[in-house]
Amino acid sequence: MSVERYIGRLAPSPTGLLHLGHAATFWTAYQRALQHNGTLLLRNEDLDPQRSRQEYVDAMIEDLAWLGIEWTLPMIVQSERIALYRAAFERLLASGHAYACTCSRRDLAQMTQAPHEETQADQPGNVDDEPVYNRKCRPATNSPAQSLQENTNYRFRVPDGEAITFIDRNLGSQSFIAGQDFGDFLIWRKDSLPSYQLSCVVDDAEMQITEVVRGADLLKSTARQILLQRALGLQTPAYFHAPLLRDEQGIRLAKRHHALAIRSLRQRGLSPAEVLKMIQV
Image (cartoon, rainbow, N blue to C red; front, top):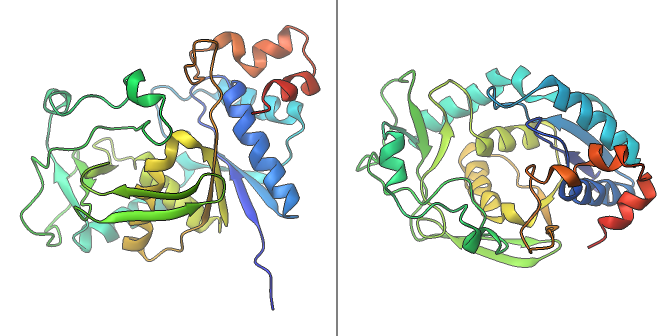
């Protein structure tokens, strides 16, 4: 009986310096790979052209190595893989899973409350990257699109009322209701780039990732990505959602916490061992 080879990944975005929260999640991913005698890959999620910087790419590589986290080369770079995402998007379009959305930013702002409000964002699974869509542009049927419209956003049509369930290897059984906990979500942007959800699914499948280790704030994203995997006929990996680190006020750490950036802690003279002690949760 063969044993499945373990393949994990680190997936930082070069939009700022890595902080203690990132270190905690990436250290967990590294330890999980070691425990399974597996492989750990590094993916540079640089699909935000306005905020991604080469200096942050260099810093994240240096900071991860300084912590003692090792990965298998070469680094995967998302901006070099647009053709893969485009092909997956066109499959979703042809199968009727995607539709054009012409809502303006003002239209979207008038939907339900933004999910990044701290009252919701501090609860595991409630941090989200977009509010529940009000279906304004959703067609009556899920027929295939006649043609691809450039400079247009596209959404994935979720099966309203369906429970998306999975067993998280750290947090246990999880369940989210499509159309209630999350709505039709963005998969292709009008700047001809994929959304986080689509690029993540395509890359995890192409890289043959067997377990995704990431923060507990992305539980809803996992539910979305399971729907994309089903629509594209891709295998669903295992998931391990790590607890979030918080500051003294109980707010989850983010890139705005510059004083807790790995680079800042290094400059203050802390050793890798001292930083790793700080991230034990």
